Length: 297
Image (cartoon, rainbow, N blue to C red; front, side):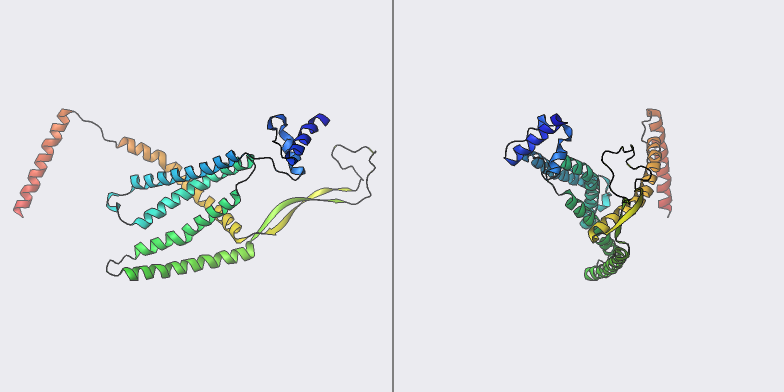
C-alpha cells in the first residue's frame, strides 16, 4: 500500500507546484486521489480543441447528409417549392442524429476530464426538439393546409391562430404536469445504528453487522427532489419518444425486408429481341385501335 500511494502523492505535489503530471507513472486508480484532494486531473488543451473540432465537423456533415436525403427522396413536383417544410425536415433529421451522438461525446468528454459542459448541450438539444415538435412543425402544417393563393395574409393569420391554440394547450398541459409530477425519486438505502460504539478490538463478521450489535439492516427508500422545467421537458420527451420509437421502429423493421423483396421482384429485367419485337407489335396495334376510336368520335 505505501508503494501504491507514493506515486499519486508525488503527482498531487507536482500539480500544486505547477509541474507537469507524469501520467505514465500513475496507477489506474490514482484519479481517486485527485478527487479526494479536491483537484481535477490536468487536461491537455489539444484534447478540448479536438472535441470542439469533432462537434463542428460532425454537425456540418450531418447537415449535408440530411439535405442530401431530402433532395434524393423528394418528389419531382415539389422541387424548388415549399422551402420552409424542407428546412424543418433537415433540422429534424439533424437534431435526431445529433442526439444519438451526444452519449459518445459525453463519454469522451468525461474520460478527458470533463471540460465541456455536455449537460448544457443535452438541454439545448432536447429543448430544440420540443420547440420543433410543438411550434415549428404544427405551424407549417396549419400554414400549408390552409393554402389560399389569393389571400396569403389570411392564410398566415389562420395558421398563427391555430398555432397559438396548440401552443397554449401544450404549455398548459406541461405546466400542470410539472407542478404535480415534477419530482424525481432517487433510490437510497437507509441504515440505522441503535447501540453504543463497537469495540475496535472485537472481531467483526464479514457482513459488517453482527446479531445484537445494534446495526439494523438497510431499508430501501426514495429521496424525492424537484426538477427544473428544462429537465422535466427532457424526461417527458424521452418518455414519450420511447413509445414512438417502439411503434415506428417495429413497423419499419417489419416492413423493410418486405419492401426489399418486393422491390427485387419488380425490378426491371432485360428481355430478348423476340420479346421486344412482339411487345412492339402489340403496342402498335393498340395505338392504331385507340386512334381509330378517336377518329370515330
